[in-house]
Image 1: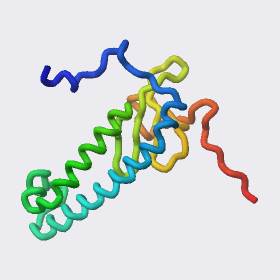
Image 2: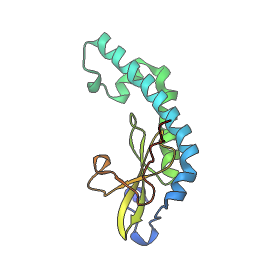
Image 3: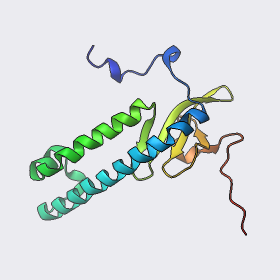
Image 4: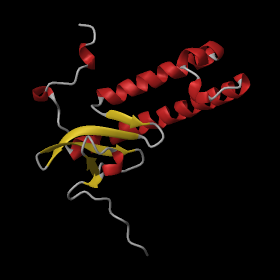
Length: 151
């Protein structure tokens, strides 16, 4: 059925991630997000360059206009789409390119939340409620990031 995949999953079909499940995905996510950030920078730099040549704001360029002037970026745009789909297939919800944020549905203390992992973190150690987002991140009980001792 067209559009069926756009609906929110039914609660009984929702997978609730454990911190250990997210941790197991981190090596794959590190690779995917590293590639995503490199491609995104390349496309953004091309858009800034093209906007300067056209005398417009880069934010005003849509994908079709960019690809019309820079068809060489078509493969990069397709690779971005594939990388985002791979993150989705891992069960993650990609939130931000620059920060490399990926959320995973979970339950903490019986409450439905998102485990919040950021590119470069060695393990998932934070969560937030859906309405709070990244700014509302809280340490996972028993998993707060430890500061290494100073020698």
